[in-house]
Image (cartoon, rainbow, N blue to C red; front, side, top):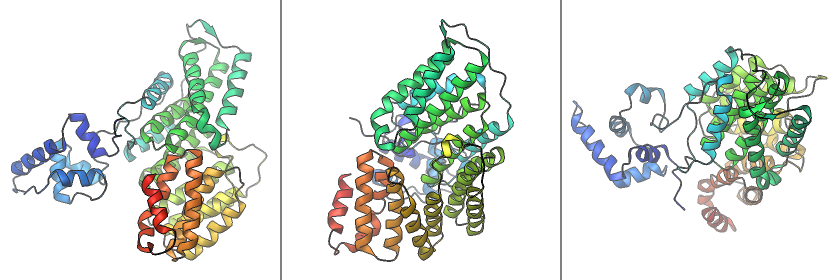
Length: 442
């Protein structure tokens, strides 16, 4: 099996058919062409270090890389390394003309042989997609297509019931059923493309397509396949928009934002979350959105904005309402509020406060949410390492890794692997060398 292309620099080379030596030669040529006469000290080993995230190119090297790839200087000033590199694809526009196209595009992304595991939409692209979703009014659904399959009420009800069962499976079961979920999404896509249905049924089909695409996107996200996840969420947003379901669309924007925060691009999360907050009214949905925006602010070091959103998340979560919460945020609970608040405090350097909140949240989390527990345990381990409680951090980290491997969530394994550097100074502690060896084999 070919090694996955995991870095934007490697993918930019791949698009042009360049080897690492080819890139070095083009950087040297760019240096000679520069009027200020820059000296290029880059070699193949340096390119390899950049592509494995062992070192970041300095400002002069980035300038020569931009010249080599014909990237305008304005992109270097606007985006941090490596997000200015070429190769990021833009999301398809919203609107009825694109609903099936986005679904087919997502299916191609899942089968993408280039396996661009790192690619995600840029901050500018996400902001534009969120703005379209907020401002565009979907056209009226076509009353029927010219296909041969009629989608009647009985078939539609069966499709919805099956979709609900697949989308609400626990994470541990979902990993074994993803092919069935993707096949169900393909069936719905076929019906949207070539079936016959009235406007009401079309509305239900688009909403079901959005829900299934969102579920499949989360599976790909858990596998670290961020390019495919983004394509699936683009399809989910497009179909939610055509179905005129603002709450479902807000949930998809929240998915995009969570991915951006997870990948260390919190700035990209702010506009989607802000647009979603404007256009959804249910207290639980608003609480989840405020909580995610607080995470983004914390990652950016903005303590005041973070605490404002945390207070809003708590207030809205405690608001009584008779209306059922949108399906995408029914998981939201006081446990999530407590642990994510603790993670915010970790980001802001308030370790003691973080520990208290994380421990409280873990005590409230039901056993059925193992993936969330594994993620939360990793946050707990990081807080324990910050206070040098190494033995307890080791036990929690091993538990998190056990959960992540059992449920098949590669991104959660990666999260635990990220604790490795913090454990290395404690190799003399019993169990730490074995844990580091275990991380190496993951």
